[in-house]
Length: 140
Image 1 (tube, rainbow, N blue to C red):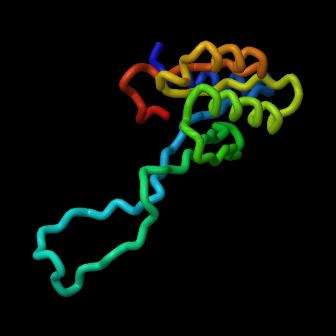
Image 2 (cartoon, rainbow, N blue to C red; image 1 turned 120 degrees about the vertical axis):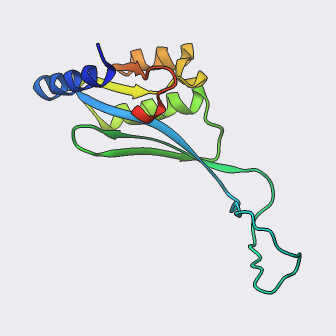
């Protein structure tokens, strides 16, 4: 069955049975501005200088949006996005959607999303993980 048709069927099931359907994906924002490139002589008139902090630090925004209510859930951190931060987010998500309601989570195939720790936490939190087909990030 086509993945899109499967998601439409799952959405109807969630509506009729009172479950939740969320689309999950982290975003990784760098602290420094990334300038576009331009060919010009160094020090030319009109050159803009942008102050920035040093290093390669970034902010990770781990989040999901409900396909049913459009409610957004996020976890913002400077820690690396790995299995630990994903499991931390799942615990937070479970607290936001209290009760016995099952949560269906659509996510990509990032290595940390497929870790045994994430799968175990999902089971504890009554979250069913549904992975996107490989090489189809546009579906999320």
